[in-house]
Length: 242
Ligand SMILES: Nc1nc2c(c(=O)[nH]1)N[C@H]1C(S)=C(S)[C@@H](COP(=O)(O)O)O[C@H]1N2
Ligand SMILES: [Mo]
Image (cartoon, rainbow, N blue to C red; front, side, top):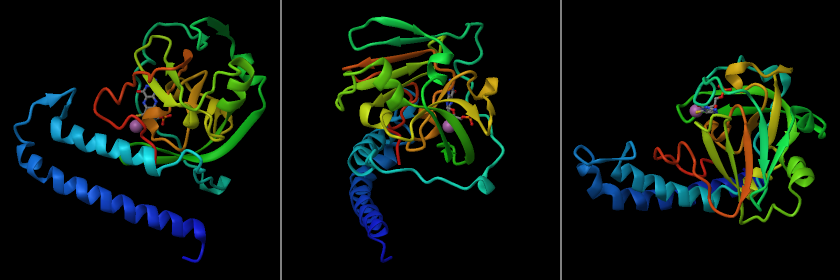
C-alpha cells in the first residue's frame, strides 16, 4: 500500500465506514420498525433515510474527478440486457436538445457521430449485483456540450435525459455529465447498438451505476434545477456513483 492513490482510497473507505457506522447506530431504533413501516414511494421509510445518508456520502466522498477503471480487450464479456422501460413503445426515435433557456433544437444521430469518437472498455455495474465489461464507442458528453450547449455547463447546473416516450428519465449533476468517461454511445463491442441496449444512442458513464446509464436517449436538457430521476423516485440514491 505504498501507492498514495491506494492510501487515499483506503482512508476514504475507513472514513465512509465510520460515518456509515454512526448512521447504522442511529438507524438501530428504526430497524425494528421496518416490518410495519409504511411504504414510501416503494421503499420502506427507514431504508429511505439510509439512502439519504448514502446520498450525502457519495456526494462527499466519490468525487467525479476520479476515473473509473478501464480494461484490456481480453477482459471483454458478453452483454446482458437489463431494464426495458422506455424501449417498448411505438415511439419513433428522435433526438432533441433543450438548452438552458428552454429552446428546443432537433439533432440527428450524425450530429453525435461527427464529434470526435471516444472508445473505452469499462465495467457496467448494476445495483442488482452483476456487471459486464464492455467496449463502448461514442462521443464524450463534454464534447457534445462544448459544441451544442456552450456556456451552459456551470458545475452547479444539471442535465436531464429521457427516452423518446419519456417513461425512463435520469438526472445528472454537471460534473458527472462532463466527466471524460461519460459518453453518448452508438457502439457496443464494436457494433451498432442493439435495440434492447438502447439503439441508436445511449448514455454510458462508468462512474455511476447502471440505473443512470439511460438507453435510447430522446431528449437532453440543460437545466438549473435538479431533474427528476426514475430510480431516485423509487428510493435509490440520486447520485448513484461509487
Ligand atoms: N431506457 C432505459 N434505460 C436503462 C434502463 C431501463 O429500464 N430503461 N435500465 C438501466 C439499468 S438498471 C441498467 S443495469 C442498464 C443495463 O444496460 P444493458 O441492458 O445494456 O446491460 O441500463 C439502464 N438503462
Ligand atoms: Mo441496473
